[in-house]
Length: 274
Image (tube, rainbow, N blue to C red; front, top):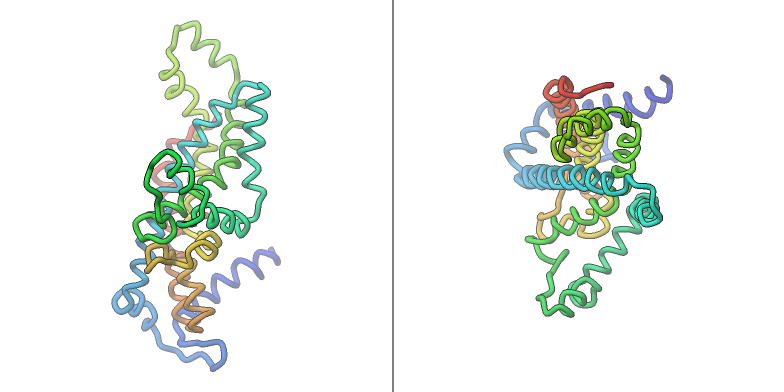
């Protein structure tokens, strides 16, 4: 409780407290009331852009990670040499620091000398600008995030699949149940506790994305990949507007709390526990 109080609850309370002040680290905080929140939503349009970018990123990453985690887990169920190799290959990126992953992918996606464009040109397909175009930069960030996270989430789903009692599938086989019906009526409901957990953690992690954007694009080109965490960092430690950044951080914290509560209220009743 002491650890949680010092490193979780106190920072949350202090964040909300500083959001009502004009504070630049050096000078004494000056109380300004709701001025920072007014600037967030009605004066500085770049906050709404960062919010929209964060929502787009979160939806794309969560949907793709859940989909591919289930598909890869189903594929790796059988204990073969190929599947064991696939598990290792998929999980390895999860062990690599995000900074390293970002630097490697930034090199791969280089518009002029990147490997990805070289492969596309080999097949006579026009190369993409990847990180240098506002139309493809967010897609590039999503690709890297899915590539790094898929191994961890697939193994979580795989362990849940192996925990399902085989007697249930044997009973379904006696009734000549088809594969699709077996998946949607047996497998998916029994995976719902793990999928519900992954949905919440994926959403929270996606809303807090920072390293990938910081290393690969710096929020650009333009503001096309500017997300809330990087927006808060930029205003706090580059512009030294700590009060304003705290207001943005408080909004982010409130959004994650509300979204988690909505998940529990809307989907919690549909989770099937054995």
